Length: 225
Ligand SMILES: [Zn+2]
Picture 1 (cartoon, rainbow, N blue to C red):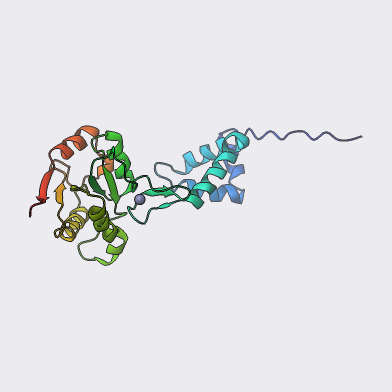
Picture 2 (tube, rainbow, N blue to C red; picture 1 turned 120 degrees about the horizontal axis):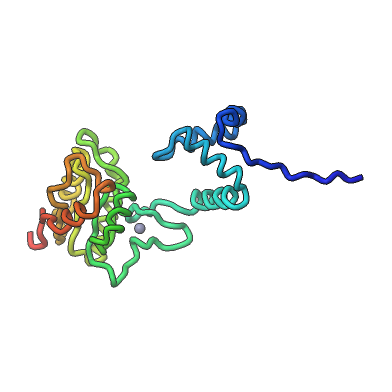
C-alpha cells in the first residue's frame, strides 16, 4: 500500500513558545539578524515577517526571493548621475527628455531624490552625490561624480544647478565645494532657501517646507558672472 504524503502544515502561531522553537533553526536566526538591520525593524518585527514568509511560501516568499535576486543583479548606481538604473535599460534620469526643465538638482542620496519627485516641485534632472564630504576630508570626492556633473551641464544645455544638500555641516561643506567646481561654467547655481531646519535632511522634510525652499531658493552664481 502506498502511503499518501500528508502536506505539512507550517501555520506557526506567533505565540511565545513557538519563537523559541524557530530560533533553533540556523537559517531563521540568520534571517532575523538580517531583517533586523532594515530601517524601522527590530527582532520582533523580523520574526513576524519571517512567519508571514514561511506561511506564504508560494505567494510571497518565492517571488520575493526571485525579485531580490534580480534587483541585486540588475539594479546599479548610474555612473553618470549617481541615481539608480536597471542594467536592462538606459538611465531615465540621464536621458534627455524634452518635457523636463533644463535644470539639475543636486541631492545627497536617492531617498532625497524620491522625496523631491513626490512633492512635484521640481521637474528637471537629478544628480545624486551618494554622500557628503566631511570638512576635514576631501578624499571621497571622486564618488560624488562631479566630473560627469560638469559634463552634463556643458552637454545638455543646463541653465541652472540647484544645490539641495542637507543643512548639516557636511552638507554645506559639500555644497560649497560643488559651487566652487562650477564657477567657471556659464550656469546659474542656486541653493535651497534658508528655512530648512538646521541639521535637516531633505528626505524628512514635509512637502510644504520643501516647496517653499525651492520657490525661495537663492542664486549663488549667475550665468553672466
Ligand atoms: Zn544616470
